[in-house]
Length: 584
Ligand code: FDA
Image (cartoon, rainbow, N blue to C red; front, side):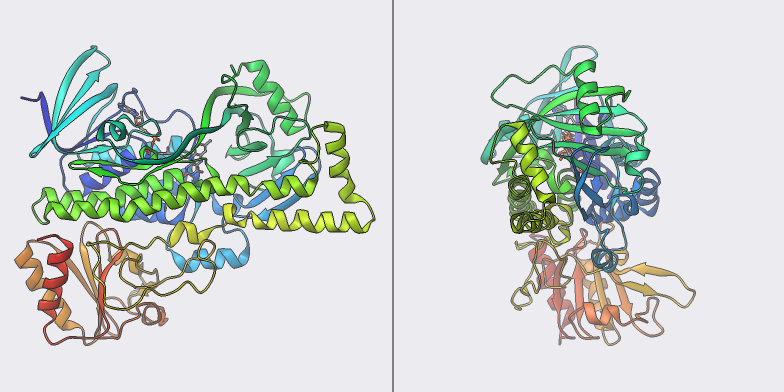
């Protein structure tokens, strides 16, 4: 007999675990989240928070999204990505990033009701965790996962209560391993991995210092510092990252992975900060220092029976592109509704198999992208002449040569411009963030081929209602002046039918089939004199079906299925689609 029981046990209260707990509690599922520490993240690791992650917070409730904006630094202050020799020294180039360029900003605004912002992990985790606990998650801190065993009916997990040093067991129907990059749950579940851990060494130095005079005229979250002769290991160069504008900072600095990790004391931290800022008199208030490794590893399968892993447990990669926490939250959005419907008996356990089918390709994609982004700093070093020599004097001369009035210098200037511009694949890769499309048994094809990407799929989001894609965002209005995003009509733990004038048959079918299957299906007829109206015509352009057709979305706002027009027996069609998706 286990000491405690719950429906879903979550190991870890990072972005993945806390988001999953918050979603499960919102869906009314009993769950418990444990963390081996007494509290949440104590360093602001993740910060770039993309639109898709913000949409998950928005789905949890407007108050959750609003609280994130309250603490986050606005997108307007994020995007002057600077390459320099020090903050006080020469600026070599910059690129507008994170939707700062007006063309990119337009794409961001057209794509989502939510906006990107800079929200350090020390703020994101408490928002998600508080939401989870206030809605019913049973949280146990200072509780360390040790091992688990599963049988056909459930999972028995042994944990250590670190306050009493006593072991105890928790019985659950399902176990979620959201226990980070050194995941024991993934190891014990025997998940298969590809790639390599520890490809480079990095250290974080967190400090307070007012650097406004160096940065306020070129607001950015990232200042990349290239100094000939300095340590160019780890992430590739020195990074000065804004944590709070403009008086709290995190320096990321490399160390040789073949040597033991260095002890970062106050003297070392101060020296690194003074060098990168370029002010030998700079006084810093050191808050913390720690080392970490750059990884290049992902799980190719995310499930073993009743055990699921998510977040860094299954995708381990450098911070490039700011994808880690964002993807972890999105993993939770994919799995939570499936667990909820299976636990409630609304879906068969087969639905859960779609989690790995849908998210494992994303894990591979983001790990590959983040590591490729590191390599794409190479052309900048090359163009600056930093790879031709290890002699700092010669390296400086090579960099200085770009200022000469010669044909070679003109070519060098062009090479620098091009190499910096190419970093758009790290710093403004909107498509990587927004183009996730799924193919699994939890998606039903309408027979149409996948629409090809008209622009670079890593850089540009392409909306479509092709089954498997995220529902496109458009604004819809009512006569009283209220507006909602199409995404607001979907989600919230429910399937949603979106139709137009002539689609009343889908509404009735949803009622009938929903009652038969015991699920709540939201329905919206969009059109003149309806609750929500498409005054701008944006929905008509985005939906890719006719007025009497239907777009059916899943609780995670991905399109489950669509029909171009009304059919003879809409209830039969909905029944066919939903029984397949729900594995009934
Ligand atoms: P995470 O590691 O955050 O949490 C794991 C949880 O499991 C913790 O609560 C831990 O205590 C718990 N745990 C572990 N073992 C346990 C055990 N045995 N028993 C009980 N509990 C256990 N991402 C991003 O999206 N945007 C960004 O800008 C950045 N930037 C960034 C900068 C830097 C410098 C770093 C190092 C990282 C980033 N990231 C990022 C990545 C981001 O920090 C990372 O991807 C997420 O924290 C992953 O979230 P998880 O919840 O998966 O794991």
